[in-house]
Image (cartoon, rainbow, N blue to C red; front, top):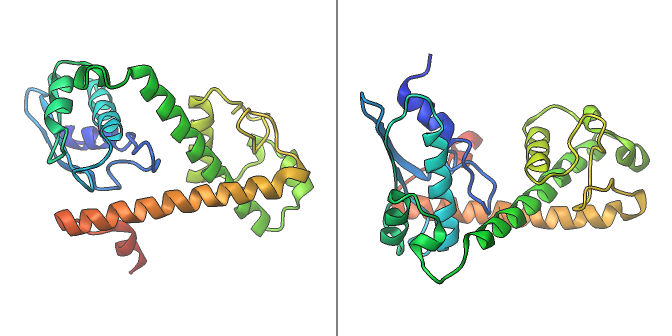
Length: 234
């Protein structure tokens, strides 16, 4: 049975960096998490740089607060950003239960943040579907078979699971009979455009992986946080 703190950390593992599509826990963005006997939760978040974009910072902090608030038995929730140039504004807005506009009046509206979140989900879906596609091609699946496959025929694994989760979040087909791989509008991929689509997917994936590597390096330099990907490679 998980402790209260473990349950909170498990909830936070469902919160992702909007650009990298990686959990804030595996990225080591959660610097501390405490839970009182009465169910009050305090979470501190650290980012790779004090200049991290305020909209990204707000999305992660707000998502973290909401994820913890949904847990049964939780009373008060405090999620605070550490050492960010807009920490004061974001932390105050979160404490008031306000959105991005509450932190930065007149800067943007919360609908624009929703559009940004959708954009990054689409990029993450493209990158992850590309990795699934490359894996299938590497096992010898031919292109005609690949574009005819359904979701039910996809291999089990974290990439497939996250692809389907993203498709569900974006309102794209994700049922077992739906196409295994889809374009941005939900249509099945076509054999004649597969190579072009896959090249674009690989470029997006490379960009996400590079940005993730930069974030981990900055955390190591700034906070002395070990890179978990390097630890696993040993």
